[in-house]
Length: 395
Image (cartoon, rainbow, N blue to C red):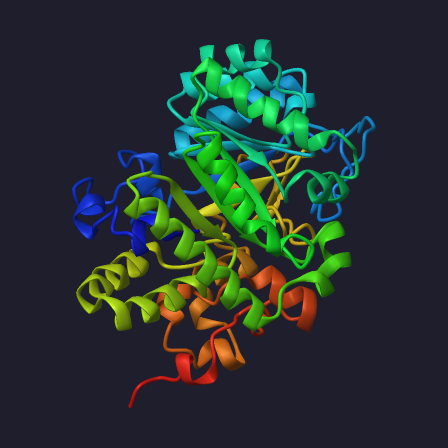
């Protein structure tokens, strides 16, 4: 996760994170990526069921009941363990979390245990009544997926009317007083609509947007050929930075982030090095605090059936199951060789990644994407768009 507004527009300084001793238990949400202890943010895919048919769905969800989801007793015990372990944020996802009958109960319970509860949703089921309930239970944030403007989004989501219902959900959350943001997965089908998404942020007074790079997992692996080329990725990132700065310069503050490609960090730094060397030095310090990809260390996933994964995209790399032992024990199991390698992945990456001067900033980027293309989780991430000159170690 790279904070474009934080880094490029200087809305966060290194001192902001240092003020909290970089402890995840005390850091505000917008500074969590700079924590030193890397207590994991946990995505809980609480259900596999979904009412849409998204072409990039890593969970390969369908609108049907699954019989292997965690029951109430198991779910509450898991939340107890996450809280005791010091997990700062639990992100309720799916499938579609709002189809789960106990979403509000579990989110409220997580909040009562001292965690921040957020949801990632397609938004189509968030009525005014549901938004009020989510506000009352103390939900911190609702991230609503929009993968383009109306025609593109509806095609991407597989159900007509999805776009209008998502916009209604944004309004319902705003009306209830819940912070809401947009989630946009960049690909060849929708990259031209990034300006429209920025316009929408301004028109609807939405304070936050996350632009996700495509990860080749689940149904997303079927559209890997629709990922942007390296040049197209650079162009998209330039546009996102340009539009973010425009909002900042017009005193319209928005939190803009890019997600799932940590090459964005060095790219932004190199751009600033030409434009504003003094700010670039602060940005490099913040990127070093961020430490790049944190799958298996500062970020984890629990699936609907209790399986624990390094992140939500790595569906074939189970680390254990919370039905058998607590997440806290799974996450710290030193006998799990793969998990231990992930926690120090910079020692194990190969080829281009191993020789990159940005390894301490990027941490080798997305290992799941490397495995999906090369068949080796330690090979080069194919989505790294930095040139050979940009990654070459200085003499």
